[in-house]
Image 1 (tube, one colour):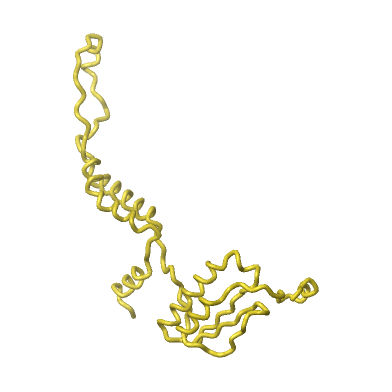
Image 2 (cartoon, rainbow, N blue to C red; image 1 turned 90 degrees about the vertical axis):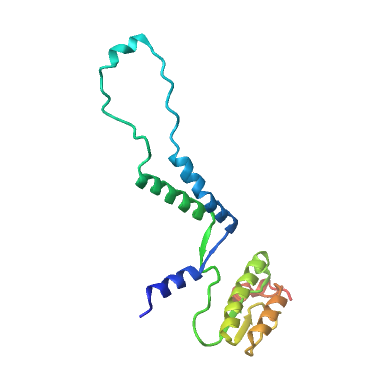
Length: 184
């Protein structure tokens, strides 16, 4: 059974931030602490004669001289959580393909994929990074008709070069109902 420390390390190791520079604001927490502890100066007293009637009344509510420690702690935790939320935390931003066998990438590199091609290449690079780390063979299958279909397993380095060299191709769609509109 894994230990608590091992589980905590596993959770923290997959954590990253989209805007890590905002974490520098955590350095400002002592300043926030100081600002929350400061009480405003006492009001200046001016004698106003009609108020003498009210001197004998006791107020049922009194304002404490200092903020209670638990409220101060709660406010500091809220400020720290707000700073962490603004830093855009991401858990496991690079998904790893699970398993021990070869990695098979089926890539739609038809002309319709050209608009999101950079996103697709980034996803393929992330998958190949995991395959490189695990030293898994890679098979790349391109779906565009004019694209070369590689039917042999590649080492991850060569597969990464193949993915980098891939571009969207003009070709016939896979669905037969669209073949009549296809011109080579």
